[in-house]
Length: 239
Image (cartoon, rainbow, N blue to C red; front, side, top):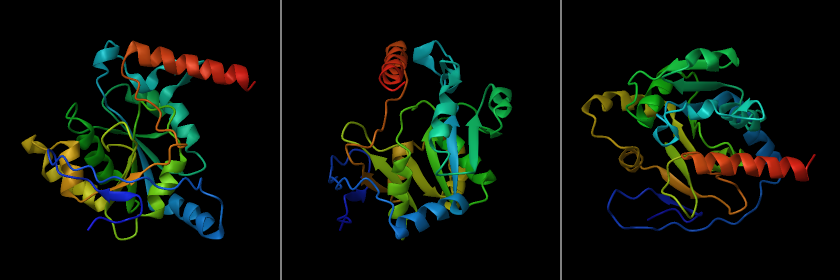
């Protein structure tokens, strides 16, 4: 049966099954065990920021490079995770020099615009840690504590994906590097979707506490305006 810790296997496409349950909000108090876990993240996990999207609904702009008060979106995401992970790879298929100028290791998405799976596969071929923590490059309000939540449950699993109450599980994703590396064998066929792959590898879905922000993918001009307005309000209230 499904694990009973606020988590479940990702169902296959079209199954209609929604066995997700809520996890108690314990907000990650810094116990000795948690401190040990966080210390292990730096040596066992490489962060992967996927920046290869086409930005079609934003006039084909490179979304992770869009700025708020002079700071690019991708920098905001990485800065928020600075105390959690040291090693990062940025997977991109344009403006590679701009990401490199920020001091990060950038890898060219080998399959171009083939979607997030190609970015994951390319990163897996370059990573030197047993795990990858994969994020979308257009989620500037993502709560970095979600990494800790997924890492707490990784024993005995090859992949774990965070889930909220609004969207199907996609990212953030914690996956074994060797499992992700095998993606390259299936991508040329062009028939593999992200959801299908997660189901095929038996990814464990972890329900995120309601106080942990997933943030919103910045897809449209309205999303961008709302994000910038929210940041302005936050800065006004917290000078």
